[in-house]
Amino acid sequence: MTSFAASGFQSIERFGSCNRGVLVPVGSLDAYKDLIRRKLAIGYWNEIVGCENIVFVFKLPDGTIEELPFSQANRQRIAELCSTLNGDPITTTADVPRYLAGNAFYRELLGAFYDVPKT
Image (cartoon, rainbow, N blue to C red; front, side, top):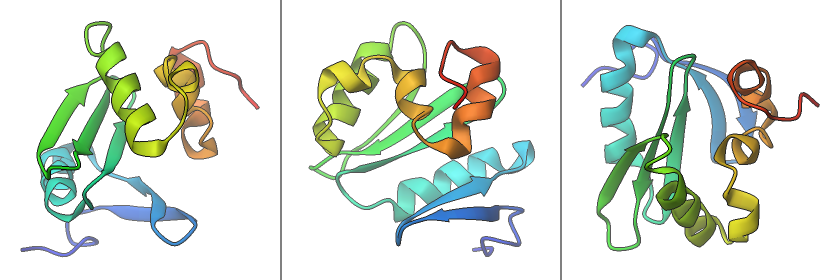
C-alpha cells in the first residue's frame, strides 16, 4: 500500500482535528476513493469536488458504503444522507452545491459551475 504523499495526494488545508482539504491528481482519483472507502469512519462521508463532477462517498451507520455522483437523479438522496449524518435540516442540505459552498475550500470552484455565494 502506497503512502498518502506517494499517491500524489496533497493535504493543503486543515479544518479542525479530522477534516482537511486535499488536492488529488486526476490519475489518482480511483486510489483516493479506495483510501476513503477503507478509512472513512462509520456515519461520515467524503465529497470529492472536481471541475467536471462531484462524488460523495458515504459510510452509513451499518457500515455499508454508498457512492453517489452528484446529479439531478441523486440530488435528493445526497441531501437526505447529508442531513441524516450531519444533523443539518434537509432545508439546508437540499441545495447540495450551496451546502458544499459553505466550506470555503470549495467555494471558488463551485462558484464557477453552480449558482452559489462567492463569499
